Amino acid sequence: KVRDLSVGPGNYVTPSFLADTAREIADKYGLEVTVWGKDELRTRGMNAILAVNAGSAQPPAFVALKYTAPGARKTLAVVGKGITFDSGGISIKPAENMEYMRHDMTGAATVLGFVQLAAATRVPVYVLGVFAATENLPSGSSYKPGDVFKAYNGKTMEIVNTDAEGRVILSDSLAYAAEQKPDAIVDFATLTGACQVALGDHATGLMSNNQALANLVLAAGEKSGDRCWQLPLWKVYAEQIKTSMADVRNTGGRRAGAITAGLFLKEFVGDIPWVHLDIAGTAYADGDQTYVAPYNPKPGATGVGVRLMWHLCQAWKDA
Image (cartoon, rainbow, N blue to C red; front, side):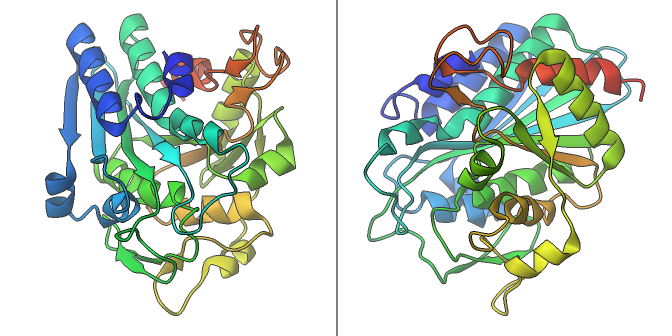
């Protein structure tokens, strides 16, 4: 499921397509699904998602998919980035290799794939899958560097670079997930080129506000073959995303880019134990990457993270 969605062309795998896929999974497994469009997002104050969507003719979609496990004691929220095509917006990317930006919704695909696996195998925890889906395109109505928006949890952000849009839509998604009071949150995002520069295609970048949860995710990755490497969220790095214009700005520049992106996301989860997984380097394989995960026999989307989450649930239910 994750591989098929991740390699789909952006004119087919639209935000509406991802929302319909969530409905299909819900119908098949008897799950509860909520889908909000532009009007509902505006009513609920999900301004960050609407900001990124402003340049696109495709309407956005916000999806919450719930699996209820009989007798479970814990709830795990899984949040994904769902940019169905990322041109960079006003801060536009170079033309070379831009076609690969159709893969920028792999975090949302991971959410859908894992919720489906959780329901099919009856994992022993409640699962809340959340993602926002939109394109990021330039137009006369696009959001701009210098704009300021209020996210779902009331925090404000200054937009410094419109190509740092994934963390912007994740801010509303994470804040919504945190509002539901789960016992833990794990997010997946093809978030930063900086993480791929640091770790290559061999490991997923992991950042967390809770070391016990981080240790469980690291161990689950070792079992599944989805190896992770932890990066620090030291307070000193947060200086890079301070601004006089808002509570936080959406990029801290080139240095420690994966870490400052993680610190931006941390602003929206509150005190709930949370792990951020930057899959920018591990979501797609150009060649044989069985060293990344043993179930990757050929090039293409890897489906990274789905098996990791299954193993995490088995260990976390009693932790």
